[in-house]
Length: 572
Image 1 (tube, rainbow, N blue to C red):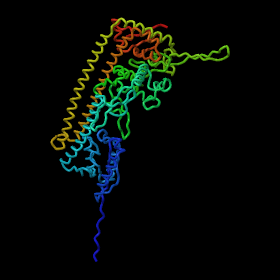
Image 2 (cartoon, helix red, strand yellow):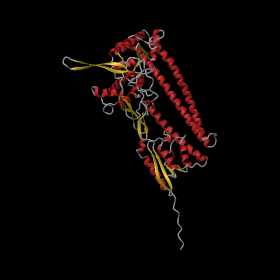
Image 3 (tube, one colour):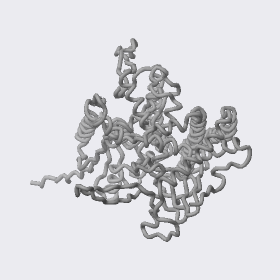
Image 4 (spheres, one colour):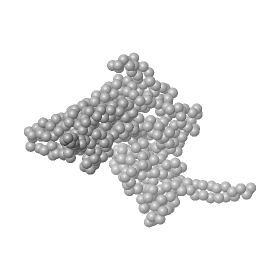
């Protein structure tokens, strides 16, 4: 009897699967289980396939996040090079990514490594001829376009809703309540709008007033929790925190511009975006205004000027502003420097102990200015200790003289002339940058269109070269966008400066009286609006005023300014 012929064992292809969702809602919903089930059912339909491993990405945008920054893609590449699987299966090819300048080359990389690329819905993607390459590119080009269009539609819709005064989601925000707008969306659901809560709006105004007077978020929160009577809870019903206060102080909602995109999902976790990344509606909503726009803008710059400097700088040099208002009882801390070693003057206390007739001992303390450089052993031929009575009286006396000069002027016309002349240059620069940006966008579109021709063999440019040129062009575009943003900040600063000078001109007649009645923090704010720096030397004091103040003092004097343009010295 002849032996039965043996069938050689079937060599199965090892299959790895990749599933991805782009936001937290999908991550905890049914999207990944759906992808997993579809992929495993597809593998089961292939007798020569066996599932060996998977790669999961939760809350990762295939459009915004580059493949080089996606751990799952990089791990899959490493495993492919190590020969750990033969097939990479996805639910749809857009799970690999949605970037037309990158994802087609990711897929091609796997194919060139001998990996079969399959999609449950689209089958196998081969790269054997020009047609295959074109299909590969067009698939991701279309996917990228859909991501862009979806983002644009959502953002534009939210902006239009915001400009119509309609609520776009999240919380109403402290100072507001939600009320029915009387309108419904396409699905028949009621749409809401914000309405100001007057008693809470007064508290918001108090926050901004305290910020003007030098209070930071931590001190405002402490006041609200420990000193304000009656106690007013935060929007969550509990105590106030510095984070909540700071969020309120930088939220453009209070000047009538409800921001969109304040939070961003990263790996399924929502994080607060930098305020510069927020999207604002194009028009103000007057019925939402609690803080006037000019005042809101001025306070942002004021708070920014107090923020700790990250890039250091030479102490005592022109342009230095205090990083924050000191809690020192001395008026000029943060604005005053040693003229010999350049170190800041800090606070020290002169302590004396005396005994009463009863035998009880008492300690008397008096604050003094101290050269921090000399105190720390830095070479300095100046004095170590300076009397606040002498230094502060000299500065205040000179400021009184300067304000008396300005009382005789009508600053309004000069303010408008000065600011307008400066603004014209900045606005012209912005216009040119916008023109350059438009040209770069046109060139980018031309390069993008050339990719299709290259894949069809109708272009003299290789896809890799085009990819490099496109990346460079996008980098240039980003630089232009950054430059435009910086120029827009300069324009805003000049507008705020104009508002500050107009405010100063109104307060000049009774500045001394207001100063005398103000709190210590407000006095420091009033001085910091005028003073750039005070430099103390053995033979006198140099008082340097801020640039815009210097300009108007020149006008008042009719010649070179007597303050800030040269040293002011008093013999002691």
